[in-house]
Length: 278
Image 1 (tube, rainbow, N blue to C red):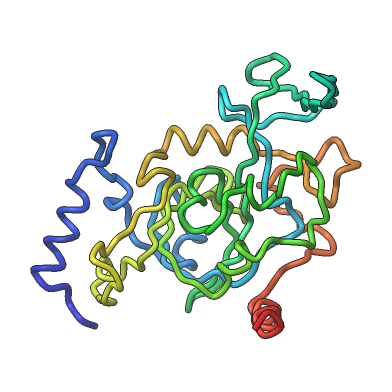
Image 2: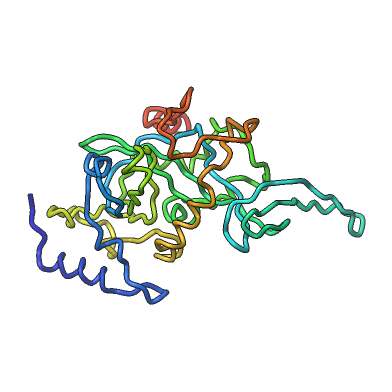
């Protein structure tokens, strides 16, 4: 094991103490670093830093949801209105926002990723929402949907920009919640992502490939914090799965029951697709 040098330690301390664009310090870096086995065996509600590799995309769930531009919470499509203006048809999609308790038309698609991750100690399921995922997915949800405003698509079709994540390693800021500790919920929610592995926090150092050793990808360079991201998770805690669109009442993501016919996009498939594209 290589012990962190004074220079590396200073970089780490500077990262913790350096405020972001909102004038807030990155408190995630004060969280304890854990491996998957330690995270899954946690006995208290906490936040931790987890360095692991993305092994598969869980395509049993949608990779996106539609959120209200006003409150950022999930909305449900209720209809479509078509008007003729100067001889041209203008289509307006109508949505219901439970949080605003009102009909809204200003909405946008947002990431809702369910990933399988692994390290040397085991595997786990993580969920990443909205701006937290923006820094690691090359394209925006709006561009990936190519103008579609459908809530339900074929869940087995996952954009390349998302499957390209398979095989890559990141350090995730993970919420270990009461559902995980007390009820054995398998899904862990992510509140922050670092593009570079923060290995020196555990005593070993992996040289960074950029001038910034820890590139934060939580929204606009650290704009999503505990309250912001946690509220987003609360708003989509029981959204409709693409493959279960005809079911109104769905099990919560914290359910310990396993979903039947789980589809995953694994590393092997990603490699095959890459060869075909090459």
